[in-house]
Amino acid sequence: RGKKAFIAGVADDNGYGWAIAKSLAAAGAEILVGTWVPALNIFETSLRRGKFDESRVLPDGSLMEITKVYPLDAVYDTPEDVPEDVKTNKRYAGSSKWTVKEVAESVKEDFGSIDILVHSLANGPEVSKPLLETSRYGYLAAISASSYSYVSLLQHFAPIMNRGGASISLTYIASERIIPGYGGGMSSAKAALESDTQVLAFEAGRKHGIRVNTISAGPLRSRAAKAIDFIDMMIDYSSENAPLQKELSAEEVGNAAAFLASPLASAITGAVLYVDNGLNAMGVGV
Ligand code: NAI
Image 1 (tube, rainbow, N blue to C red):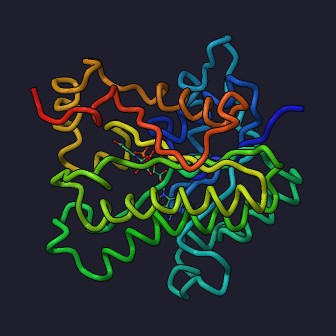
Image 2 (image 1 turned 60 degrees about the horizontal axis):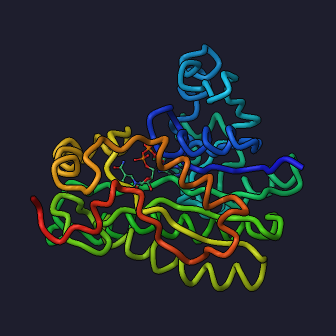
Image 3 (image 1 turned 90 degrees about the vertical axis):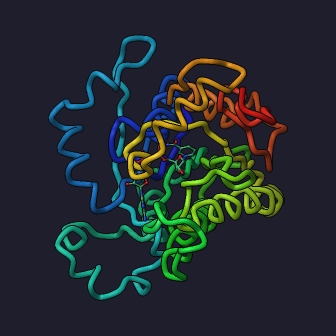
């Protein structure tokens, strides 16, 4: 039986979510994605018009198929949580059933169950501000979109995940080491995400027999990362200082995710796996 994967946080072909989808598809999984509502139109149009066809090519030459694209806003759990101005916003009004609970219900209706859940999304409106200058609103918004969104996704999807299934999120080393420039409470949000990975591994392991891990990825020039002006600096820093002196490709993170989601990783849960050319292990720059 082929496995089904739901990947939240795919809106173009540049980010980690897309690369994870490809690696899972190459390993034979059926791909469902959750796309942020404001980005849905352009993503679906680009997909339909073949704009991503070159990036859809799998190692065997076939094209990755995305069985279904679900609109999703992981900041809202149920329709009751959505404020009026968002509900009536032109970009949201055109789609329906995009709160976390409703998406899980739709996936259940359409496919019954899934095996793999991927959280590849983050948002911090004040990411370019130092933590010392971050507002309460900015801090809580970062935690809501980048950390609680994962608790919520797992809460709603775990009941439709087959035993032996796996869940994966993406984190960044700014959670545990000082990375000046990763502000707005995003470092705090990643620290929460990593701590939650352990607690959720215990709870979801006991209750649902699924594994919960996170990948601490090195820097990638994704759409989200372009909002952080130092991304190019971080990529250069890594190629100068990491044990492996090469640019990290999204595919390498995708392949690690496919491993974590596979039976090869059947005893791995609650882990932070570094996929960063080894940069995390360095104590000084060289
Ligand atoms: P990306 O831009 O491909 O992915 C972020 C996605 O989150 C976008 O598709 C965006 O539409 C979506 N999103 C934002 N708010 C949302 C919401 N409320 N509901 C649903 N979707 C929402 O960028 P990237 O960099 O691949 O990010 C994926 C994950 O990887 C994030 O968790 C990020 O923090 C993490 N990461 C990225 C690194 C990098 O250097 N790019 C390094 C380490 C971790």
